[in-house]
Amino acid sequence: MKTKITELFGIQHPIIQGGMHFVGMAELAAAVSNAGGLGLITGLTQRTPELLANEIRRCREMTDKPFGVNLTFLPTVSSPDYPGYIRAIIDGGVKAVETAGNNPQKWMPMLHEAGIKVIHKCTSVRHALKAEAIGCDAVSVDGFECGGHPGEDDVPNFILLPRAAESLKIPFVASGGMADGRSLVAALALGAEGMNMGTRFIATKEAPVHDNVKQAIVAASELDTRLVMRPLRNTERVLRNAATDRLLAKEAALGASLKFDDIMEEVAGVYPRIMQQGDMEAGVWSCGMVAGLIHDVPTVKDLIDRIMLEAKGIIRQRLRGMLDA
Ligand SMILES: Cc1cc2nc3c(=O)[nH]c(=O)nc-3n(C[C@H](O)[C@H](O)[C@H](O)COP(=O)(O)O)c2cc1C
Image 1: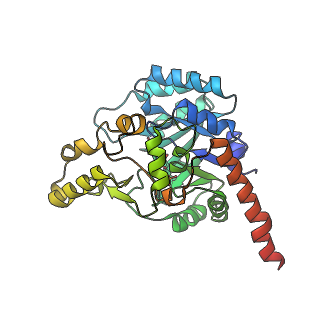
Image 2: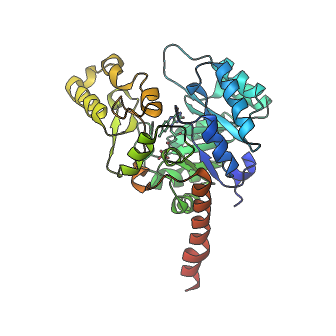
Image 3: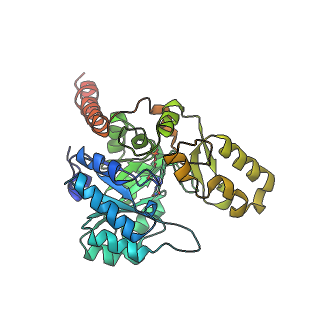
């Protein structure tokens, strides 16, 4: 399938694997790229720029296809060494970067001079327009359904994507709630040039996370996520567990006086314990409503092949059949 996104990144299928903390390691990124999509290493999961440089090297050993790096600009007081991470990306010869969190304006000249294509992930049309204005090559439009940080506007993709299509000149992919061939065809119909998936890629054989995480996603329904940290304007969609319930009880009890310090136990440094050790009650972790559409743990290649086959089948048979009738 050829779209503006496959052309931009030099990939076979218009499918991107979004950055995911403690999931987006070289193994997953390489598997997605080898299957014809765009795999992304999650930059900040690597504690230092040197470790990121090493992860990029490892990924290159596993694939000769294009892959990228996610750089998330966090609202933290002590900023990670972003110049160092960008140097590792440039020196590693990576040609695609997904930015997220804050606007990447400050880093655009460095990235573009190195011939890197930038896709900025955002949750509103106004942020997408800002990304376009500062020279981003594409955007990933993350609807309210998404796992992780859906922003504070709560606009689902059925509205957000056509609004993006009305407003943007640069190409965009649909993100949030995407799982299969139906998602891809719907995304294309709403004006996107492809799709970005997070949660779906965790439940794959190659995702380097504990099997408990994959099984939790398969077992979950679309009713099992919750929004946490709304009072801090740092809303995150997570899978419901004991830590989620505890955190929500603190939010209810403390109201507007809630501080980040009050919820440290549920959120700080919990990802390694969940993703690597499989301790599913260790804290809150991002998961999309799309869990309700995830029923198996295939290889990445089987997943992507299945998506493309289903998407082509829907276009060629189901939709075309309706026209011919
Ligand atoms: C476990 C997990 C961790 C994530 N970590 C990040 C991250 O570090 N940076 C980022 O930009 N997005 C992160 N995301 C968001 C994904 O890249 C993607 O935008 C989102 O999962 C799309 O929604 P979906 O889960 O419905 O497919 C994360 C998502 C999940 C599920």
